Length: 144
Image (cartoon, rainbow, N blue to C red):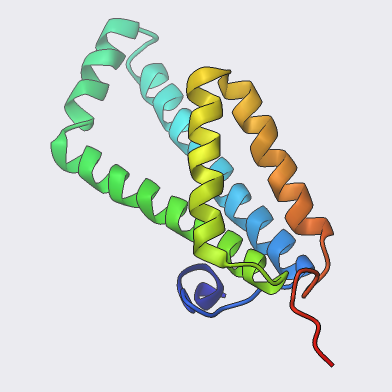
């Protein structure tokens, strides 16, 4: 399973069900991580007696530079894993994987900057849906 997320960077492929499953598992992992962080912050505030200023001071002590570096590395790894499974799925439908991923990321950044983040999220959901629905080798060169 780890090979699907971080392995076969240049020539790996994922069929539709595998892409759906791995992208769902990755989203679920991120959701559980975020909920755990929110619950930890809430528990810390509760332990401090509901004093918001004390909780904010405690968070400033926890969120030091080493923590932010580790968090940045973690988020970079999650982003890489997401883009890698997208590249594998694009390669499976017969297109250039990483080249198209770069184009999609640039379009999402442009849409986010000039339109809205909601429109960028909608574009991302549309691309995800296309990758789930388009069959394998759809764009492959069919030679007899």
